[in-house]
Length: 386
Image (cartoon, rainbow, N blue to C red):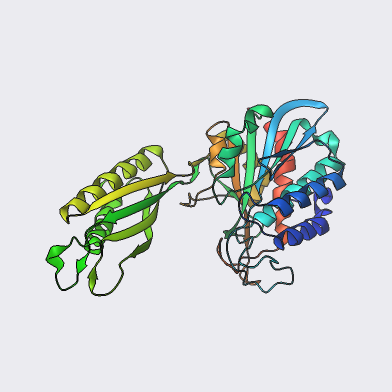
């Protein structure tokens, strides 16, 4: 994909914005300094129609003279509780927090796009809404904004977003129609038994023994209750319980995640986790309390919007396989047509290979320009219709 000269001219400022934002990472719904930086930059571009939502969300609106749809472009703005290990001179100044998922790059892309639109108002068709969204990593800023009336207030017709992705080489634009990222949920199991002396196990109900059986039993759900033609993941990454090596424990807690590419499979997993965990616990004289936190839905790309992106990206476009990662951009797609795509940032020679959420995740900002180029051309393509 060829980057237009006017977009390439933005590179110095895109780099500066990304590195400035990288130094001030803030967790979800705490992004005060980040929001202030965004508003300062929008004002410098001459964009004055700016709204504050949810305390830290920023919305900028640009109105074109030509008729067209209302297109929203969304970036996430929050960081992660990760200690940075990149060693770069612009590293995080907030200990224990880092933009380890590329949201600094997403914001720099959006600011570059805003800068471009402000300088080229004739390219704006309809209404362009630039959404700087908090709390993607949690608790889910997209749903909070939807509940707050964002989509209806701004009368959004379609929404577009992107994510830098180290699975693809620099310069690649990757997407697919329909399911691209998974629906996800959190599982919390509390196994209640009866404590006793380890030398007298018959007087207790061993919550650890029950927990081990429950974990093994739950792992049969994907292999025995889900069609082999479907994809699903069930992972338990945390278990806590017990007080001493010679005491039968009366309480164990297990935490995990489940993911699927369809609501039907996800609901099957939910029902089976509930049944298997509670019934197995009874077999060991224990009780299991099952709680779910149902989080994001399937990232489900509108096929017509994907075709527009493929046309724009040309030989830079590849069709991505679906990933079990989750994204709260999916919550917008429950309500209106949406397009979410990956921007490749992998370069093994430069050492840009660390996965998302790693303390070593880094990238070359030059390749953020591909996202800006796609955004500017999508305005025209999405207003052509079918």
